[in-house]
Length: 290
Image (tube, rainbow, N blue to C red):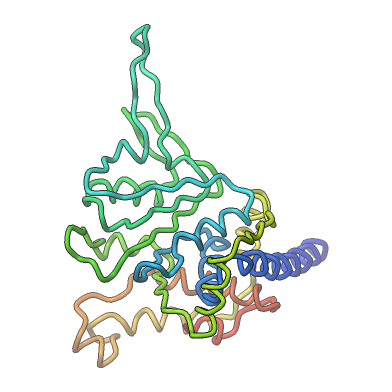
């Protein structure tokens, strides 16, 4: 038992170091957005998915691509359009010359999926991806196919163009650990962005972690000890969003439905990971607070 604890302490220190190295590599290409980078990496270490919402030009796609580059993982980008079909994502069976059926895997069979402008495709296609996110597998013609591990979906959404879009239903939004809103850069950050993007000097992003490393850290996050009062605080936050006797005054007045139990789970996992990234071995209430 002592050996396991010592091993976990060393692994926790390794995660903190790896996180700092990842931030440094990502900062070579992405200027600012430190909190966004932290949340995306937190969702990855918690085996979750993230939805990035922001106006065009805020480097959402570049951010995801850079994170994928810094992780030694297979990366696929899916550009969501109104005519995209579920088979374009998960794959389909095809017949060869001998009239035998073979399953041709779609782009969802990768470690990191960039679902670009996920609200541009109809609900049927959205559901195909979201089912894969939840189950970690797809079913074609009665046959189950397991997706590679680790597996993450980082989806982007444009909030200002609503014409020709299919907003994600609340039940599907619940599959994402974080709904991350990107804001405009500061004046100083934008000056640096313009200087970098208009110069002929591209920075190479080095690979920091492998898939095996990430899976190891995902298990580590779940083993982090957490006090009962911190868990109770996270659950209370979720309860306060639910209209009724447990809800807050604002929830009772303005909300029809509150956050489900998955939100409490995400809050606790996020707090554990946040503690590790901050160099602590157990989360406090501050690690739960947004």
